[in-house]
Amino acid sequence: MAGADEIVCNGRTIVLPSLEVVKTIPKMSAGSNIDWLLHIYFARKDFMRCKMLIDQELYKHLNPEYLYFVKGLIDREEGNHIEAMHNLQKAIELNSRNVETYKEIGKTLFIMGRFNQALNVFREAEELSPRPDHEIYHYIGSLLHRSSSASNQLEVARQEAAEAKMYFQKAVQCGKKLESFQRLAEIYRKEKEYGKAIEVLENCLLIAPENTAVLTEIGVLYLKVNETQKAFDRLLEVINIDGKCSKGLLAFGAILQSRNDVDGALSKYREVAITEPDNAELWNNIGLCFFKKQKYILAISSLRKSIWLSPINYNALYNLSLIYIAVCLRKLEDSENAFTAFERSSGIVSKKANARNPLIYLNFALFCYETGRIAMASEQYNLFLSTSQDLLLPTEYKFQATKLKSLLKIPNNFIFAPVDEENPSPPTHIVTTQHNSGSNNNRLANKLHNEDLVFSEAQSEFPLEVNTVVNSTGGVPDEKVDA
Image (cartoon, rainbow, N blue to C red):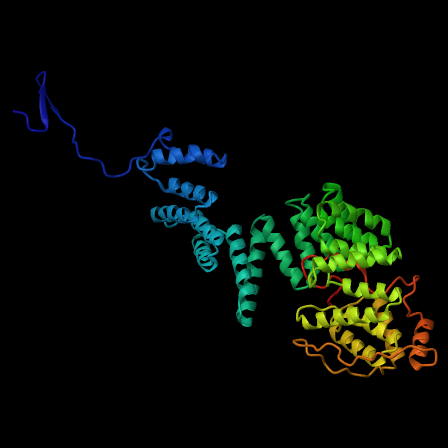
């Protein structure tokens, strides 16, 4: 008699196989795994087919981690950040060691503005990653840099800024992410380490040799270190690659303008005006060109438009339009309005803690001396020295300052009282002496003319350079730190 698990067939006893369900997940054949198809659809941005395939396979797929992962990425692309987080967290629950999922969660939190949570997620991904990951380093650097900028505690901000710089350096060393090079160069630029910034961006050109933004930035940095020819070459590359690059055209025109090629500069500015008619830097430069062409009314109109477009823009141009308006008014023999414009520009810059432009004070001092305001000239010269102690100014500026010092009879060993940089007070003692042929003020003004400190056509204008306008990201374009 056969047992319960046996049957007799043709006189032979056959043992029946067990019907117990196998609990372990079997290895799927290549034809039954749809991850590859889902990846193809996602790479093609065919999100509709992706979602149809996910809905079809999600609840019968033996390992839906990748399905939840892709579904989260699609939700994020469509702006559904909450749903994206929900699906990516499900993928993490299925595999808590997947670094890529952590990275995508961090990116989603970054987009949502949850920067502290994003930083924690990327740090966790850094610990889980078995090898250096330039993308993780880049995001940690970006988040630390953002945090340092918003921090109210100076010491904490410095530590976070230094750590951000270190992570960007790591990202540049182990990866080829263009943004990492640009952010590191931006940090070097803010630290006034222009040589290192140029080196980083030159390496960046190995990744993107025809990137006009990088080429333009290199050109601007070369101008900062007074390498005009190298800047000219880089900016010429920009124009050859993209003839409508506004920033490149503006910087290139500024170089031409500094070389007294006014017509060439104006031709470039006309091209910029087509695409960016409301660019304050553009109208500032155009005004300076008209000033050199002795078209003072047009110069004043252009500079007034620049001031109207950006009345307190010190980061890009120091907003020297007010000073040049003063110069033009002086040329038109309107000395009182010229003095008012100088006084206003000097006062505004003095009140702004992070704005430093010693040339404003030097020009005001020269103007005061010429018009007989000796006390005011000495005060402005004091401010000029106080704000230019760590700067390497061009030789012609030093020449003008030295001449003014000798005319004011300031001894070499004279030490000016330090100026409070947190709240420097603008000039208050204004002398409004009338000018007549018998006064000492008139004789001093005549002496100034005789000493060639008068700003004649041969000497162009006050000792201010037009190439400062190429700086559009902050700082003092012409200033250089001693090595």
